[in-house]
Amino acid sequence: MKIKSYEGILLDGRAVRIGVCGETIVSAEPISRTPGMVRLLPVLVDLQQNGALGRAFNNLHENAQNDLKIIGNHLLKNGVGRVLATFTTTDYSILQTAATAMREILDHDERLNRLFFGIFHEGVFISPDYGWRGGHDPQFILRPDYRKFSDLQERSGNRIRMINLAPETEGAMEFISLAAEAGVKVALGHCHPSSEVIREAVARGATMVTHFANGAAPEIHRFKNPFWEFLSNESLSLGLVGDGFHLPVEVTRTALAAKGVEHCFMVSDANIHSGRKPGIYQRIGGEPCQIEANGFIHVVNSEILAGAWFQNNRSVEYLVNCVGISFETAWKLCSTIPARLVGIDLPDLSPGAEASFVRAEFAGGLHLHQVVFCGEEILL
Image 1 (cartoon, rainbow, N blue to C red):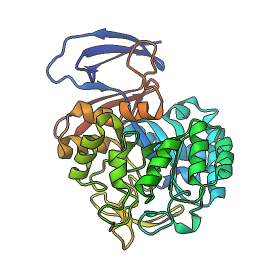
Image 2: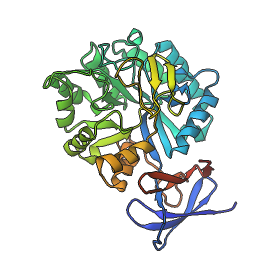
Image 3: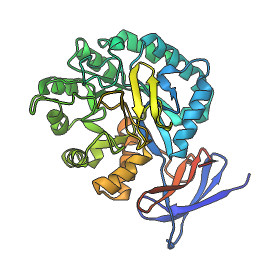
């Protein structure tokens, strides 16, 4: 089998030439840096991605394999090579069907199984209150129910890696303890607990915050809100949406300063209709949303956001151009750091590793030259 060669500069500044045969990196040798050499980077990681092009993970059924391939191809074109397929709020029977469909497909498709390495159960067990529930349909919001969750986990083939819930709701604390004991990452979001409740949730095993400063009421009390404890609690890592609409620059800078880069991670929170043309669209288990020409997505006739139009490569541009951090740090926040926080290993561009990587450069914006996934060159 023919060996393909790729050159580039790694995150640590070293220039290398790697050889790829089939799905595997078979060689890696140091070379001299040359003018115009592009970067050779690990794939981007997205721990909160809801779907794309009108296809949602929480609504997979008879066309599930085709839907996953279409979403997956869209993600790979944007450099995203590891994803937590996110289940948002809808009727739980629909989620059961989706979880079963994912198991049946991913158990027999190793390529898709690597890309969609797990599920993030974001919705359902959230606050039913206006603002705090975001664009989730309140008729499907339930109190935390570990039996329901366990059934869904079994149907998925134990693919649920992360669960979001509102810790102030009845039954939440016991749920957190059981989920953490089972090895599932527990995130807090779409919630408005007191600082005392957050600290108890952390003591029981919560370690992450879902899309920090979003999933919140437009107007809040200056002190009696969860954001201060989220920022100050050293045991919580913050998810940040980097599309440029969800968070003002100063909020992102504050989060990075308060937590440190190693305890923050960027997510897309991409909507089911991410990548589609401007217009009004219906969502599965969510209120209708409107896509503006600039990519801003919001609930129709409301300022409440409804996910994002962009994928996580947009977060890299936002961090460099708006927040003002280095390209290397920005890429880590969208790649190696979320991978570490959720407990997965990325292909490390060394011999024997999976041949999945991105060749790119940053010149005013992020330019993807090449995406390779499991040895296959993706048509951009």
